Length: 176
Image 1 (cartoon, rainbow, N blue to C red):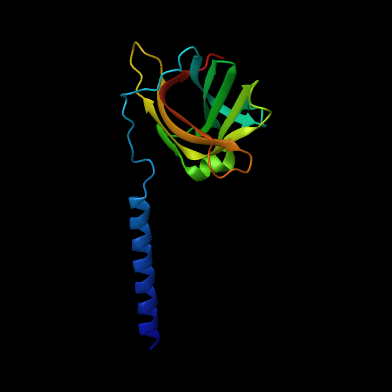
Image 2 (cartoon, rainbow, N blue to C red):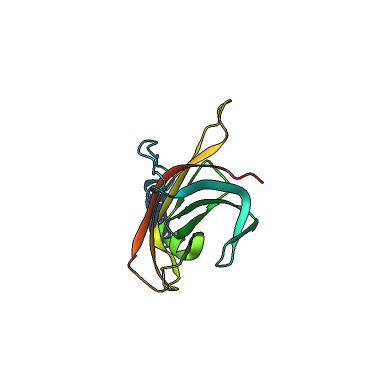
């Protein structure tokens, strides 16, 4: 009787282990590519920069960058009386990363804007995804990353975005 109970338990655990292993393989989050066509252009009349820093971290709501254990990507767009920054905190390891909706909501993506006509509403990243792939360096080009992001922007506590930042662009290392 004990042998049968042991065999049944062992068999059940084996089946659960196999199913969990298959699920993990099916959910492989870094199994993606980013099409290098149709890059996002800076809005007409605005100035944009797409940069990243290695071994950095984001501190506070005004986003001071300091030394840390992450790779921080940011876009700065300035024009028409408004400036915004979108900061994305990615791991330092690997040549790909994916920030999920849960990561955005957890604060790994931050949005800061300065706008005279925004009536003091503090907007923030409230959801979305960010994907990044390191582009192989050649003799004539610096290291760069291709980032594709779709991030919903809303007021504190909002569940639906009032706008969405959509971008696909190359990011170059910031000069220290």
